[in-house]
Amino acid sequence: MALTAQDVFVETVQPLPPDEQFRLAMLILQELSVVNQSDTWNEQDKKDLTTASLQYATALYPEEKDLV
Image (cartoon, rainbow, N blue to C red):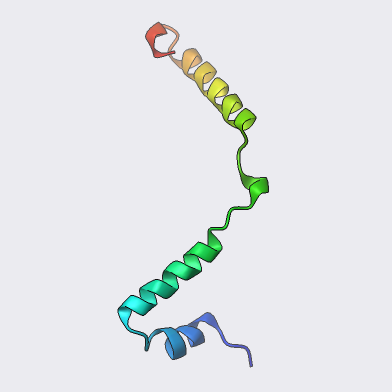
């Protein structure tokens, strides 16, 4: 029978002292936060977003020349 997350928590995590529970949580979050490079923005993506944002702001506030 496969264990559920609830089973693991009740049987293994809950008995741990709070500092070890926190350490375990940090390890899990670090594992989940590994960045998939295909999902990151490259420099061109950032430039394109900046340009589009500035063009949008200019269209919204054409009388405010000092904003851009």
